[in-house]
Length: 138
Image (cartoon, rainbow, N blue to C red; front, top):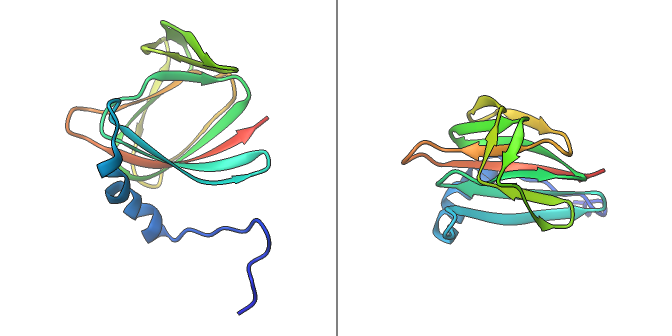
């Protein structure tokens, strides 16, 4: 077998699905666990497992592409970040979103979130969700 080309990476569907169990023991106080899966120039892959709703957030220069692997939740996009605070250069976090659109999330769903777009993942009590984020720096 020939060696993989430089920068090539491959994850099977079963590997991605297994992250729900792999990351669950690593949940922090915000009920989220994150693993950086790879960084490739202007983009990277992050795997996220949530057992609670996330903060509202906005990335000035990053596009997020969510690919849901397991579980269910909702994604609120657009509107305004309530209680907005800059947490790092180009990164804003807040408590919620006012005036956004809510979309249900289920395995296999994909969401493209442009830079400068408020977004927040919400979970009903007792629910969990695992998703891959392709983060693209503009």
